[in-house]
Amino acid sequence: ANSALYNVDGGHRAVIFDRFTGVKNYVVGEGTHFLIPWVQRPIIYDVRSRPRNVPVVTGSKDLQNVNITLRILFRPVQEQLPRMYTTLGVDYDERVLPSITNEVLKAVVAQFDASEMITQREVVSQKVCEELTERASTFGVILDDISITHLTFGKEFTQAVEMKQVAQQEAERARFLVEKAEQQKKAAVISAEGDSQAAHLLAKSFGDAGEALVELRRLEAAEDISFQLSRSRNVVYLPTGQSTLLSLPQ
Image 1 (cartoon, helix red, strand yellow):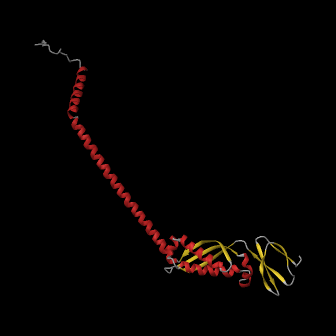
Image 2: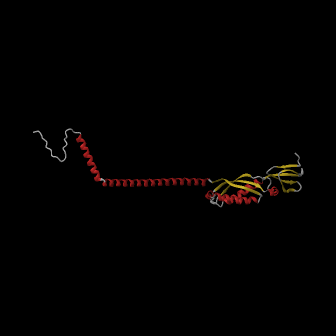
Image 3: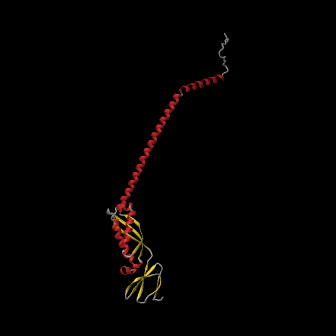
């Protein structure tokens, strides 16, 4: 390869360092370019968005330990690459992101209790994004996306939360059993009231139909007697309303 030529790949930019004048105050775009051999050399920067996870251990407002990890998508401001190379070098992300992330997270998390970190996670995330984006811009770094990917607390707080959850579950179970007993009690009362009302209606029905029932039973008995007599051969039927004399043997 000719040392007077160099390539800048897609998604990259170059800064030129000159042995006599230092860093040139311009940025070279994609493509093949010329330089002065032995005097100039290109410094290549990746200007695409890249991810980085930054873990931080800090404390909440109520002095609970908080382990939090941010996933950051970052890229450099292209126009500021010459100054960035002069002040930070090529590995600017290693020098800047952990430092400012630790600084911002400590400041934001200290404003919330541990429980608020859970219930107001979106608020916490929004504050972190705003402050971290502003802080990174002072170093010529653009943050395209910031998200909380990991959030845990100290052992004592975690145990307290677990105990609270168990207590809430037990309370819910006890409340369910009480409500179930109340429902069963109401059902028993309603059933008893229904049985009492049914017995009352049945007794009233028998009372209203008492005379008819007696007459019905009398007719059924007479019918049964007639049936039994009709089967006997020693029975003589007498016409009704007539007087008949029977000659009985002496």
